[in-house]
View 1 (cartoon, chains in turn red, orange):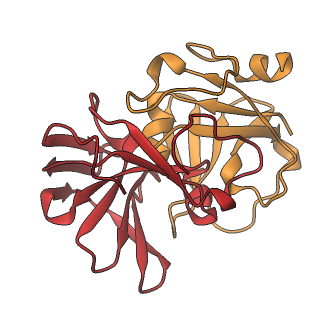
View 2: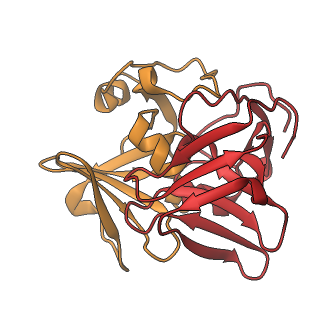
Length: 131
Length: 116
């Protein structure tokens, strides 16, 4: 995801029920939008996430991980309320934080779309951002 | 199945990480196989998800004739269209709604769908 359009270096967020909370001390990248089939099934529409360095993120509470691509990528969610929170390339330096879980104000903007070829058939992409 | 309506309320955005897009179907027309976990997110409203992978699936209001189904979970082709947005007053601050479809500051999914 793009590192442009970053913002202030302290952010907090969490799930719907409050059981999982997290804190970011570091920059967040522009929000990327993923339209792949996995992200669409997982979120129920399409996915919006911002990149953080994994070492900048502190997570509290019980988070459950699902290896959506075994050995390659996993998705973190709250087992109590089902909130989708994180996407991670296993062993990588970054953590994707799903943007809707951030406390306001986020100071972030959407940047670009990926996996548009897999997008859902019931909506159009109309924001003019790069695809 | 009802046309798809996007919901930008705080609960939907925390639950899915962006905004929700949902259709709706009569309750007795939906057959569910497998384990769904339910979370009561507000009085009379529960959200169904998969406890294994966390996929967001259903939004269900007590007493409603229909159950809402999150559109991304449908196998394609859906033969559905997005027709409007509700709870826009609570939308996230990092994106804009640019599709020109009808918007409601608060609720009214069924009304937007009927008027589409």
